[in-house]
Image (cartoon, rainbow, N blue to C red; front, side, top):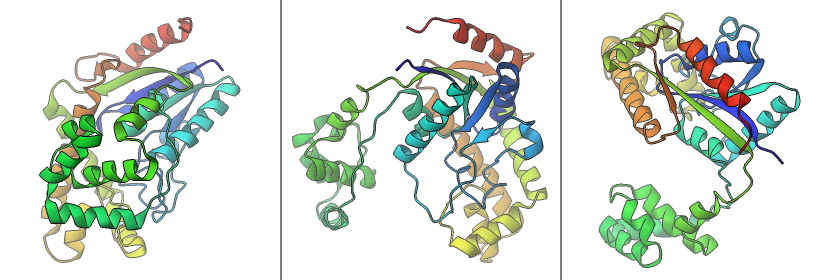
Amino acid sequence: MSSIKTVFIVGPTASGKTALGISLAERFSGEVVSADSMQIYKGIHIASAAPETQEMRGIPHHMLEFLEPTESFSVADYVTAARGIIKDIESRGKLPIAVGGTGLYISSLADNTEYTEEKTDYELRKRLECRFDEIGAEQMLKELAEFDPNTAARLHPNNRRRIIRAFEVYRTTGKTITEQNAASHTGEKYIEPLLIGVTYRDREKLYERINLRVDIMLKNGLLEEAKTALLNNGGAVQAIGHKELSGYFEGKCSLDEAVENLKRQTRRYAKRQLTWFNRDSRINWIYADETKDAAAFAAEITEKFLEREEP
């Protein structure tokens, strides 16, 4: 099977990914596949910044608002579902365009990562958690280094969950995390990716856009959405935009304080997104505050990608 050429539009929140993806879809007869771990859920439409119908301009969008907040959905689930949709889009002669800021979704899809289906042994996990609490992180890492030194070397002692997970995987499957990671990138190359990133060279301009977006979300009913979601599902989905407002609903802070906290946490989230994406040298960055016509520049990159012969 030949790889499917797929364009990825990535970057931090509020950078303009949605508009750029739709612009490319219009120009190249494409369809959009969301790569956002919050937009898959129902009931958080405003907080997740899911595109409005008028924004979509008639372009089909996939992987949006199809799950209940109480349903689990792993990265492996996402990759399986997104690949199927991308294959269908390509089979109809359309260009698949993945748009989003969830780094793990993007990298897993673009890198053709294979995930093995594993059942969780909750009893084993409980025993490992008790042992972690008993002997501490440093000793757990020493023991981990005995059978998986690579994973032990890259894990921080504070990362309790991943340290426990490394033991759990080894004892359940007989393979280390390092071995599984190596095996996950030796399979079929389903996708040939073009990665285009959009952000702002001047970080303050990005932060201004984030603050403005929060203000617009509030005008559009974010408070009511958050209150309903917290009442209906107990905060099963911890979306930025809902959890920061919970203190206001509980009487622990004023609305102004909650909103300022929301803006601050969203800015921090954008910084984490940029840290993730800056590790990927394949990304063609567009700086919206320096590029006169970001859409035209992205179209030029895409044109060359589509004309290029498959390697």
